[in-house]
Amino acid sequence: MMMKKKMKQLLSLTLAFVTAFALVGCKGMSKETANVSKEGADSTSSTEIAADSPYAEKGYDLSKRENIVMYVLGDEPADMQTVVEQANAKYFEPNLNTTVEIKFLNWSDYTTKYLLLLSGGEQVDLIYTAAWCYYNEEAAKGAFWELTDEFLKENMPYTYEQQPKESWDQISIDGKIYAVPKAKATFTAYNITAVRQDLIDKYGLTVPNSWDNYQKYLEELVQLKSETGVVPLNTNANREQLLTTFLQTKGIQNVAEGYDWMYYNNGKEDAPDASDIFYYYGSDLNLEYCKKMAEFASKGFWSADAINDTTDAQAYFENGTSGSFVWNTSVFQAGKNLESANIGTYAVYDLTSEALRSRASYATDAIAITTKSKNQQRAALVLDYMKSDVNLNRLLLGGIEGTHYELTEGGTRVTLDKSKDYGWNNWAWALNREDEPEEDGLDERQVEISKITMAHEYRPEVAGFTFDPKKVETEYTVIKSIIDEYKQSFALGIYGDNTENEFASFQKKLRDAGIDKVTDEFKKQYEGYLLRTGLK
Image 1 (spheres, rainbow, N blue to C red):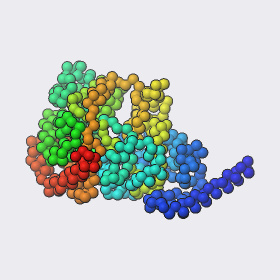
Image 2 (cartoon, one colour; image 1 turned 60 degrees about the vertical axis):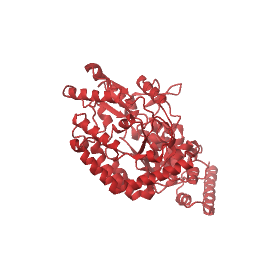
Image 3 (cartoon, rainbow, N blue to C red; image 1 turned 180 degrees about the vertical axis):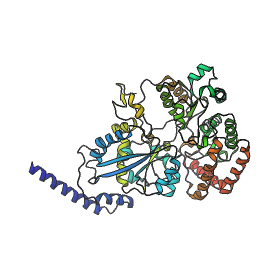
Image 4 (cartoon, helix red, strand yellow; image 1 turned 120 degrees about the horizontal axis):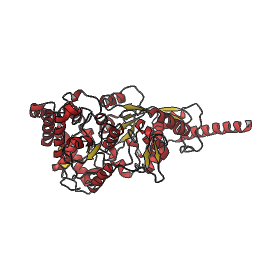
């Protein structure tokens, strides 16, 4: 035994010497790879990873125990720490010599905390990002580590091979990648509506199967509020619930994920002429929406104090105090939670059932490695492991098999009682894989909506276009701040009869900030995209 132990120590020392010599000799390394590798080479402790680790014998220096901190959005599940403990014990510690912490930014305050987190001194190695969640802005500021082809091949080898090629194109900014997108494209950019079926049945309410009928349903709930205690649409400043559906009624398509330049698709997949593209905020369409929201507010569809409310709108539907919840397919989970609490029953309607809809860009959900991380290589390996290992991936997405869910012989998943403490895919959207197991015995309500969605899927030719605001960053930053100043007030109808006057002030501020200049730059890049892709 002593002989074996000494031999093992000798081999370890020899391997360490060879590794250090190889690192010194790699004069052809890129600067960023050299920096990352050097950090690992400075480690002095000696802890071996498991021999069957997917990262064993691949040249990584994993001798030093590291702690990687990842931030995601949402409300932390009750069993989150139990799941993380198992992920560390079974996967990260033995196979990467790493512990992982997953921390949450709540929906109610992520817009302020997110930016402070990246600019402050707190440890952040990995962070959720998206086209709608500061990806372009923070990449432009240098907050996210550039993921070169070389870096991805070396430090995320499995993800590099498994990731759909088009996903890299969709997440790129001017040909550069700053985050790893999800590997499954879904219809998350299309909104549907959950309503209270028990109230419809009890009071003979209008079936909200269209935009117009939905408004009638809300009006009827207003009349019943004193009896039911239910707010027709218990919304607030956290979610702009009605904008997407309003745009669906108009046949609107976004040109680039995460930006607000749009066009009327006219029922076609064809890429529009640049002259047909307009910026939504400050447009006639935007004014029409603002006036409609002011009308809804005056009718009492939501609380007059909604602007100050921080409770998530989904929670209101789940606890029975909201008559509807308008969002993507997450409305089904909200409905199930309502029913499992024995508060009421739900139905889901597509208010624009004839509208074309496209799958959301892969850039809708992603994870970035921060430039302020002290170990980008280890952070990359952690993310690679989360995305590429099926068992670890399912642990993070759905919790502990046999506790929160179980798989059937057919490979579908069944949720168990403890799923209320760790629902499937409540936060790990950026880790989604194409082979994610479908829910067993899918609710017939969800099946019907899925049929409508698939029947009206289309693939707009603009799907691969991305915008780089770098040349107009100063103007665009001011424009975004102006929009943030007004957006939620317009969405909640705060200005009432004075909406048009406030909107005129809003328009003027956008013009003065340089919206025309930014739009010209957007269209210039779009024209280049059309030429590169042969669409013009």
